[in-house]
Image 1 (tube, rainbow, N blue to C red):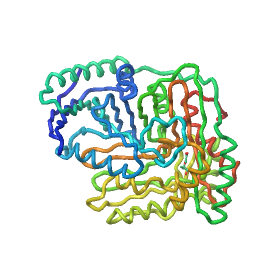
Image 2 (cartoon, rainbow, N blue to C red):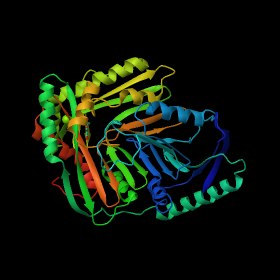
Image 3 (tube, helix red, strand yellow):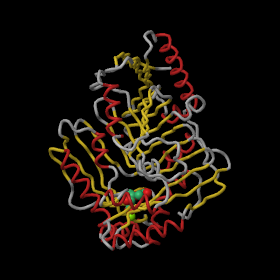
Image 4 (cartoon, helix red, strand yellow):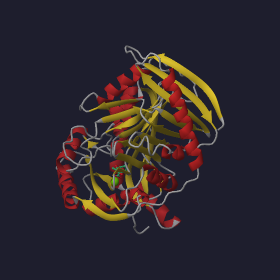
Length: 459
Ligand SMILES: C=C(O[C@H]1C=CC=C(C(=O)O)[C@@H]1O)C(=O)O
Ligand SMILES: [Mg+2]
């Protein structure tokens, strides 16, 4: 096994008896998915996977050095921020190749009371992995994280080194493994009638000026012949959705995974980057038709309105948190495998004390997932949608000890629980929405997950 030892660090955790031990090595040629799969037996339910859209950063976590969970409604962003700061305050990591990463997600709406597949899930769920792989610009680092009260942990740390070497070896053996698609035995459109009623009701309320925009979603339930595995489905989205951000987050029996085109916010050295992604049309079957559909979308007043609400809200947030920022005047097209969207990137230089989790707190939910006005829209979603979104449409992502990180909006996503999967998709309802068109838009938005899970539809 070729590897280069980089650094072992021990830090005292502020205002606590804990110590945080970190050791990082650089390894040659290691497939992140194979490393994830190497944890199938011992770390299932305690793993995560992340890949950015540019494919310059992949992060895999196996095991949990620490878990931050929050079941309360409010302050959940501040609470995670404070816990992470406390844990990392004494870590000096500037310019390190590989840092400890806090990875996890926030549910869409902590005030939603609908029962279902998310009953066990906390409102925020973040972990630092025991074994963390980072692949950054073709270099791969594997770190061990141990957070413990124990004074003498040398023997324990040696065991972790052996375990790390075992995992790396197992991943190298499995490097080129391919996975079949799962076999579906039934697909059920849950609450389909309710969805049509909700869209109609909300459209009417918008026409009566009760709100400007509300995003209504629905879900599909799939049952499989055999229980699919997490590496099996992540493998599919890696092959099929190269233009999207990919994520997978396990907690006990649940894997939440997806391929989203929508960045909520990225922070790098005090610069913040967000994106307004809202307004949709399908891809064309030929280059010509695709171009025509794109032009149609760029000039469609209903979709432009859907989009504009998002731009206004993100711009307002950047104005508050940035000393300078830039918002293009007109949207562009963002084309991914199944769909094209209106897209406006936003960037700015943060005031010194602004943090990524503050941005997440202010931005979530943008009107691409919630609506305008925000609280009114959330009330209507709770009242008419009649499902619990769980992590769907919530912020999911990572941050490091220096405050850099990236969160995406967890759409084009599904929860896999044993031999069932729940897929989610929604769309922005405005005054001139039509229920059938919105329904058809959700069908297109289900495609990425449906395809990955072995579903059939006419391409
Ligand atoms: C709510 C979803 O998409 C949002 C993001 C992009 C375009 C959207 C739209 O055109 O309605 C939605 O606002 C979803 O995919 O489930
Ligand atoms: Mg739409």
